[in-house]
Length: 128
Image (cartoon, rainbow, N blue to C red; front, side, top):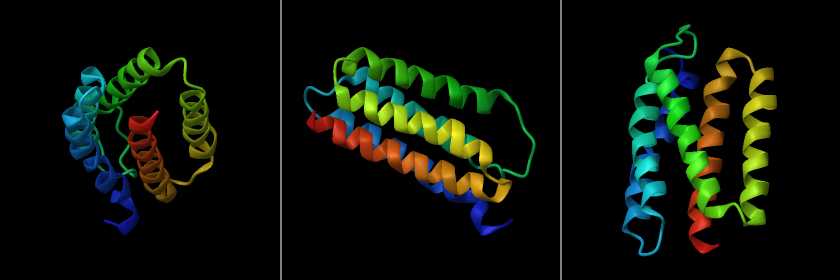
């Protein structure tokens, strides 16, 4: 086991307390916070495995599905906010372009940075 394998595991754990915090905020959309909590659980399970393992299983696809549902839910609530589009496009570019150029040992770090980017964006969304 190498140190870089689990950066994304540690950051995926942060989604759970973030979802709980957002759930407690009055006026914050409950479906969004519930999906963040679910994403925290599923993503943590998904990222317990090494990137060197070649897996394409139910947990991985469930992680993608919950992330897409969260994106759709965020679109529903924030489609009219320019900042939502800017943050979303930046996240999409990171995931699709930069991620595909990475070596295996860099993918956990890129995923961790993407998790932190999403977490900061969601925290910032409480002010828009």
